[in-house]
Length: 215
Image (cartoon, rainbow, N blue to C red):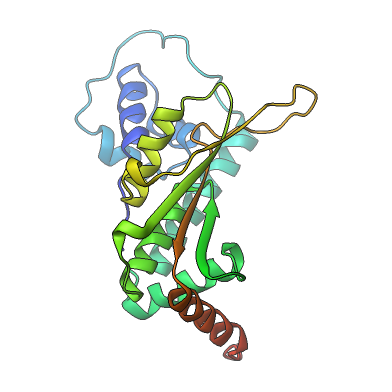
């Protein structure tokens, strides 16, 4: 599975570099590796003179922490590499074991993380015979957030047409509770097929019953 380029981070890095930010500062601010910043901004003309107003420059502790996070992220990507078919089978099964529905007669996966949803949909389509017309999706979205934008977003993430979305649940925000409201809400993919659900649960049980290789 290929890694999707960080388009937003790349654009922001180029903007900050043009304003005169140093490459190390940009790497810390965006929490990416310095090598990525260098690659993204190598042809950007740098503005001379005082830097325009922007986010507060991180202190030494914050820079060390961000640099460590970026370095470990790069190390993680190097260790995982490209997923083989067997890797994808196991990764998707483990993901469903933790986040998917184990009961009923249908496959149900709910999450607010688009990367997890991409992995789940790729796994489901790769290892099971799916009738695309029977895939359904519903959204949990706070009132006040853009429903049309959320539906378009999740449709692109999953490849499921908006016409196959069920009525959303519009939650009323509680002003007395502080919590993070996801801009695009939480998405739930459903596939009503008893045989497919049994196949998924068979993989989950086989995975959980396997013995880890001694370290």
